[in-house]
Image 1: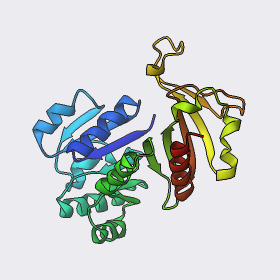
Image 2: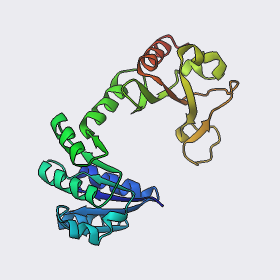
Image 3: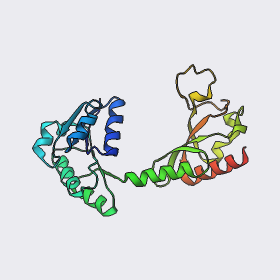
Image 4: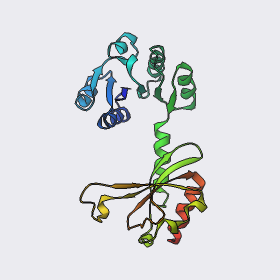
Length: 231
């Protein structure tokens, strides 16, 4: 079981800690405010009120023995820097820290952050993809040039085989077909079903969702053209 330390229980940190725990991870949640600890204590492995800038306090809860630490303190940049440096001194190799500016990113990397995330930027990019009108339901950025998208097929594609789509011509990889539970078709209330690496003769039905990976420009062109033409 992977062990996580989440420091800072604002909306992002709280959601992250709860989701990690619900996925089966061991999660230690830390915040300086007692009300946030009370809110999350039943939803994680351990919730502790302490100052993350105190190295002894962090060590006392086993911060030096987790696999991944996430510093999501928020706008208290000084506390983020000090906490990151302490975690690095404790020997952690994977320290993920939230930042708001490029300058903050550079400083955090200098003091030991293995990865710096811009939550608002990443959320904005994902939302933009889902709002662009191509029926892209979700978007995961793999790099500056490649992504994974979930894309709902046009209704006119129902009954077609995957071989009819010509995906190799677009240099796209079909990872899976997702069939939502709301589509019916005999899934007996079991929730969404995923068909990984389906065969070329797999027949699509209305509301099927393609999970596609490829270059951003190819994904955009494919979803725009195919949705517009219905072919």
